Amino acid sequence: MKNIVVLTGAGISAESGIKTFRDDNGLWEGHDVMQVASPQGFEKNPELVLDFYNKRRRQLKGVHPNAAHLALKELEDKYEVTIITQNVDDLHERAGSEKVIHLHGELFKVRSTFDKELIFDWKDDLNVGDFCEFNSQLRPHIVWFGEEVPLLETAALKVEKADILIIIGTSMQVYPAAGLKDFAPPHCQMYFIDPKPAISEHKNLSIIAEKASTGVKKLVEELLKA
Image (cartoon, rainbow, N blue to C red; front, side, top):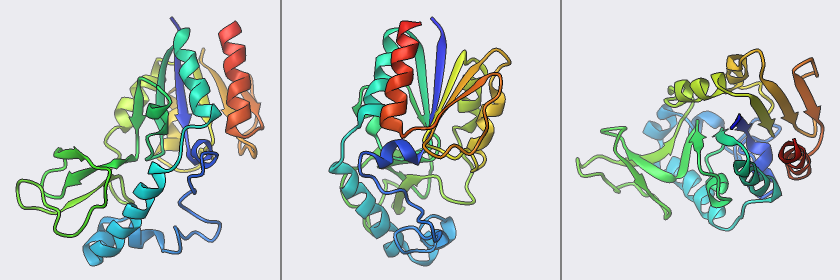
């Protein structure tokens, strides 16, 4: 069974109604990114940061996987599939995908500020005063700017074994995630699905210049026939 590794970004979730965090002006929901997505921002104004993620969490409860998420699940009938996502939503899991690596954390989880290995499922609002058993504040289980990406090595090892690499809805301009494609072996066939592709085709790279819902469906149909 061939290995397919899928890298997904904000473009795949946008079609489910999830706003991409960063607007054209560089603000996230009207906030400077460092206010709501950095350890320094959390230390300075935890109420603001928690409120920001509470709103994202509430929004996530009201959306559903789209055709692209559902099509990726179909690939598991014929291939060994691992999804590496930069998204913090759970739409891949809700679509039924079995193996999902969240590079930037998960919105429906929180963790202790005392011990980062203490991670809890959390679907409601998180407030100042919500503590772990060590009497320390809980925080969103999100990789903020300036923090290491703990699952990056795990993701790179998966890409190293890929026969097919599919990149969906991400500019591949943001590092370290953008560097993952460089771990693909020489024989790996790559597909890039994005309405405004920022890279060019070459021998091992095919571009599908479409939005995720239509582009993924076309590619999945092709791969299932192969």
